[in-house]
Length: 607
Ligand code: ADP
Image 1 (cartoon, rainbow, N blue to C red):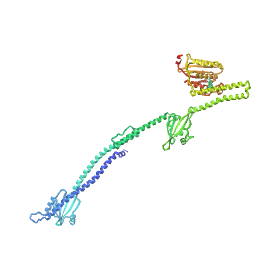
Image 2: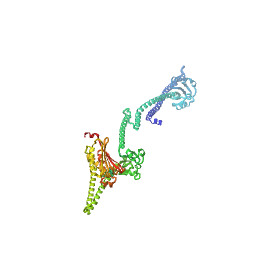
Image 3: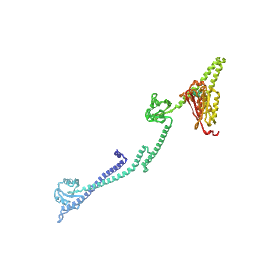
Image 4: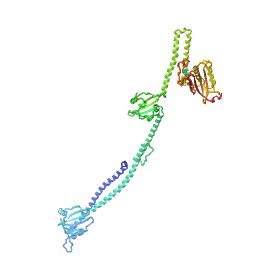
């Protein structure tokens, strides 16, 4: 893996490219140069020998033409030998002169003088005599294994070939010289290569360093780190690339920050919204669920993620996922348990790609339990009101029918029938009045006219009214604290609360019973408790007696003239004062209705 990395690195490629380029250039130049040099040197070598040969052949002719009849003159052989020795040079190994009979006349190498006078067996000498043309030949010396250049040149005297001069050139010297030059060239090339490699390393580094930097930066960016910057080494194309890269990185960082903040916003919206949100993939598997949805469905994220939405919503029997994606309307889901009512409205919307292909589904769950409860209460209320009004009206209708059928003539029955219709009318008026009071309280269309009053005096005033009626022979007992209690209340409203509760106590009291009204104060509230010794209220009903139209015993309540709204009105009025109202009872032994009102001990200081 490491090796592969090295071989794939730009730097190495760059260095290899440079070195190979130089190598190739050197090679081409070297081959051409050395070959040309070799040709040139060989040509020079041959030219110089040929020039010399020309001179020697001329001199030979002269020697042959010279008159040697005079006494004391030197022999032709000696003169030619002298001529050869005079023309000897380093590039000529040996020179010989042959006469027409192929005998050696003279030889430049004095050590081989014994060959003078011998006939030669060299076939080229014979051929030269025959062709009368100069013959040249390259051969290798058997003894030294060196190359030599052999030249056979015929020379003429009076237009007749008189002999042949044989010259053996030391051409190996030229080749050795070329070899030396070649070696110099190779050495030079090697040095050039080393320098090229060094330069290539430096150049490659200047090019690859910013690229390596950018690679590292890109890797860091992939890991989400945008803080790094690529160093800009210059303003060439790579420098500009680095600047562009840095700009790109900055933009990406900004975009990432934006996306992150949007994500955070979205996730906090999802977290704190009261509606449940579930999103699925295109196959209906849950990919996201917020806390509200978890609570509504009583599940945890871990258990439902990647489960099918149909199963999690528990609607597998009625819907398939496809049907859900096509559902235009919301559906109502009832998750109520014995302990907790829970009704949820689910809305569905598709997540679509730009191409329109469905990518998933978003389900929004809205808790409509309260709404449903209110709706239910409204329905019940309307039914109750209708019922409460219909009962007296039907009673009245039947009595009036009887009267119009002739009962009005009966002096005994007529007044009784009229009394009943009058009672029923009054009950209806009471009912309508009570409904109006409640409606006003509901719409907050009222103002509390609060004033500071002495509670004992206030209670006495109300109780006195009841006491005076002497109804059922009930005795009223008042229990007040020792100190005077002052409170800031709306007298009319609290009078109504007392009227409703005391009249209830009276209604449900046995003949000659007692009704106790107790006033007590705690730290910041006062409590009024109205106790009777009546029928009491069963435990199962005690928390419902403050509901509108609720009656423990419908028939008896109606008998005693109740509307079923008295305690509901009392509750509204106490709550309007910021107090609480509740009842305690022992079935069959009596009931106590308690209510509290805010109390400020210092309020009575001014009185
Ligand atoms: P109603 O007009 O029927 O009395 P209320 O709202 O005043 O209506 O009371 C609701 C119901 O509570 C009554 O119908 C009655 O059944 C029960 N109730 C109220 N006060 C008493 C009480 N002191 N003793 C027994 N039952 C009571």
